[in-house]
Length: 582
Image 1 (cartoon, helix red, strand yellow):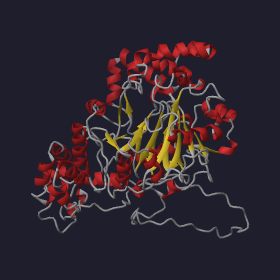
Image 2: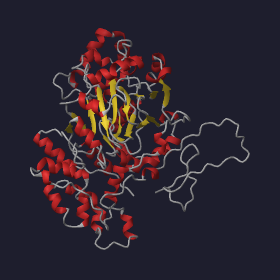
Image 3: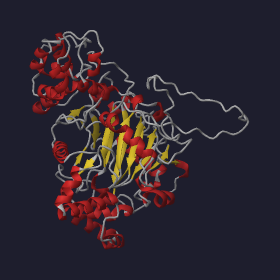
Image 4: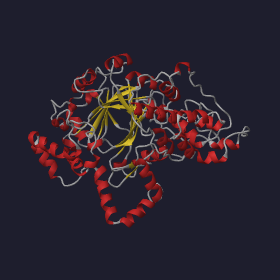
């Protein structure tokens, strides 16, 4: 791994070249002539290095080691062959077509196939396809692994089945399989676990105590400026809080309900009971991209869980109260069933989260952390993060499919851009949200979220259109109808081909002046789409130059490779797409 020297604002690279980066201790030296009575300024937090993520919490359960160990290990006889060492990703993809019986038989043939056939993603996909075919819901997940769950679901005599216990084997070396394990068990850096308020930096999201955030300050300084802000403890007084939303209460309130969970690396979503998903979050070892419960039905208006947050939100965040601030949540004018999806309960285990994305339909959003801490990473509109490659019209995005993969491959580039952005308008931002904090996510901003705590991390999020982003919402609904989401699979919702006209109609009836002012603006006001439109026009007018630009892109990807990963990003099936590691 490359070692880089950064400014004193960022990485600490004072360790000697002979020391292991994972064993190096940071030493604070006292100034010899310092005055102890002097008031000390808060020390800036050091940005984590990629090595800190590599302090894996659990060793590989099947004993797989990176391929480089093959050249230094004395026990190489009977180990992995050279062909597998160079083509393990292809072989893993081939195994994804095997049945459960096939995997069980392959596991008995040799040490390499024993380890390769027990990758949790293989058994997860078998379970998801089985319950999809049988139209089942996962009611319990107390078996501690996807393999055991598959056996319970498909074998009548599973009560006599002895739960699988991994056996570490020697002599199996694979960069690919070890990378998967690294993404499943990467460490959460200490710097992420502490509040960011004491020593603010240029790359930190602004933090404002809830008691100091007025509607005027929120609109003028943040929503109108399209700037993220974290409102400390704005949700701590809601009934939807860490203490009251315990598992017993959630199980009682959601009895008989099913919830949708999915991930970017899973072939299908799954329906869970709340009890089953809670049990899943307790497993000791999950997949590279854990299933993330992102459900729009859990917080139906006037339901008990809705009431737990809604009335408190209106009290502590009056700038999001539609009754007091009519310019907020303009989609509500369409009617509850007719409008696009807007409010979700989000739940996930440690290291789950969302890879980089922009929120749908050019909407703003707020996100309240109920239980567990979340690390947020932001990139401004029109500034794709490292490793993220949107198409010219911003319709499709090629990027790593998991949080861990992005961290291991692009963290160094991210830190460089944190410390040395090309200009202040391209400054990335980070922040940790603690339970009770609420973060405002402006429209057009790229953002990634990592859940940091064991057990279930729970949050509530709401997307909305307001007067501040009305120009871009109208343009999005009208010019990008094929990208409109949240209203396609519900019978009562207004479909994308008619949403713009219906929205204009209700705005004409309720806020005609705001509508007229927004429609007078001839262009996008957010760089996320304005820049994409410029690039799309440039490529259509100058195809040869566009091809050359694609061939010599900033990340050095050739044209064929770029087209290939874009095609893979479009498919709904898991393609096994990953960047190289180690």
